[in-house]
Length: 154
Image 1 (spheres, helix red, strand yellow):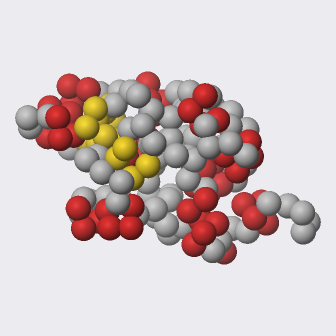
Image 2: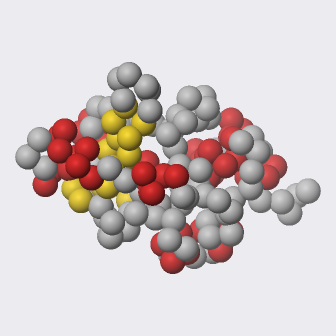
């Protein structure tokens, strides 16, 4: 058991901050602008990314201070994963919460930060910056059901 990786030995709640952060695969799917249909509650994903997201590196440009710049940025915690049903099926946090293991392309499995991109799971090169829009509502013109629905089948 001692040779088992931390994500198989520990619950999400038991992980250190460094272990928790290492679960992020760098796909960028959680950095996309989403809308909620007021009548149905359905989440509508777009191909528009947060103003802090670097679409080439697939990282936040100011992760430590992101909430100061983007107040509605959601901080993932073991306590809110279940409520965040919009998280992609491929998300390591969601996978582990649901009792699944990490996917073969996850950097902690592959040892390579690029496998999430080569596996086609990331949004690298597929998004536009929200700053490019004249009106935030214009993001709805870039609805992207395929980005969320087809990810994480493994």
